[in-house]
Length: 434
Ligand code: URA
Image (cartoon, rainbow, N blue to C red; front, side, top):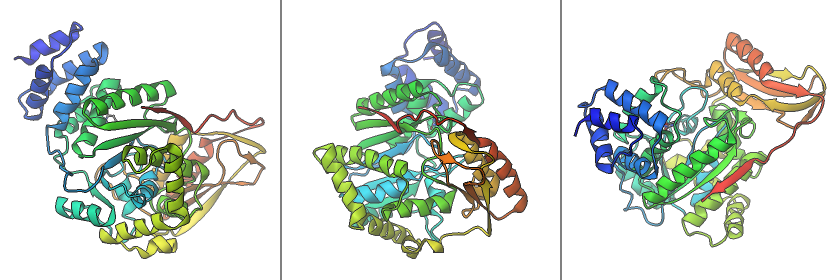
């Protein structure tokens, strides 16, 4: 088999066989196929597309390019959740203890943040001493004993995707549905769960800006999940403004904990209930959506989800006292309020910009090597649809550096749009793809 022939076949609109896709993924990962040939093939795929069978074959080949976690030593149906990412997305911190408290084992691999969206691992490190660098035995043992464990992505998880994604990133071939779906799903499938619930974000802070694209991606990923023999469902949700109010690591942890104490923002709590419902159904912990929702709500009212979070944090070396007393979380040295300069309604908040403001304050990573400041960030006080009067507080910025604070403040001011008339509000949960 020759890579040249595969490029030619795809360029002419042909369909690649499973064998051909395996050859190309293996050859590229092992360094036998050069970047220039793989770039040409990716560009051909970009223009000619891939059908369902090709997309599944690509996913499986990338999944099998490295270690595929064997979670069979964990009792019960393992259900994983994946979000396509956004600003203020602290969902795993609240959702996983809720779901675990309902008896679903959560064995999760998470990543660090890069750019304007944060990563679960960084957020969890707000608990002093917390570590995700645990070996597979401890990971399995913790899930069996406590119900939750989260570890960092191993270097050997879908290495073909890592190499290919880096190439796509510099050859303008990222935004193709088959390539995105197979990239995300190869990593999820390598992480070993029995069922996968996907949270596909749409809006100004999401990878998929257009709702129709988010649905297409959700459909592609669900087809792959099912094709790989897993239960798979996707929920398409709003990311046109930040999720909840808090953006920034420790600030988000506090909001996640407040939600477990029953004092969370409505949109965020609704998201946890919606995703949690799908996880309980997939894991067989509930028969109907109503039953699942009731069970999840119960974990908040009886405090079992909060206790679950504390047990999980402690098991991974973190200071669980901060779960009960959030003043122990990292705190910035000063704060400043952003005030409304006119009366009206918040008609929109440019979501990306809020994430970038948090990055400027030091809460995100510009490069993989950057150190992040866990204490800084933004807590919005007003969101889309809210009425405001001149001088009302729109947001509070938490910082450790005056210059960064002023730069972020200027940008955040521009991210808020105030109009005379109230905006049209769209549903937060856009739909479910089964
Ligand atoms: N995220 C991924 O993991 N892969 C893509 O191709 C795009 C976004």
